[in-house]
Length: 71
Image 1 (cartoon, rainbow, N blue to C red):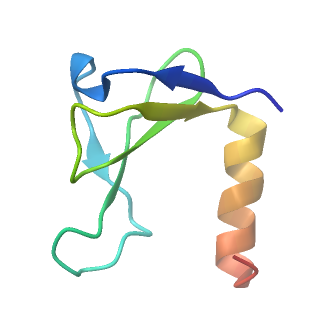
Image 2 (image 1 turned 120 degrees about the vertical axis):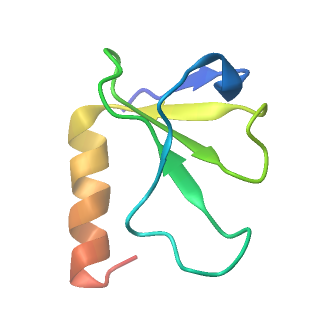
């Protein structure tokens, strides 16, 4: 599995709060749809920080594990 890093996630637009993030203030994961390399993920508390770009299959496995309560 190869992840890529985007050093400054603010260079991309269109971030949205993940449906798996809680409602707590400041506890938010944001994802970006439509990126050609996979699914970028960032911490909303640090919009100028790095984002990890997960391959589609890896992201799918992660979401599956969340839905099953394995994570």
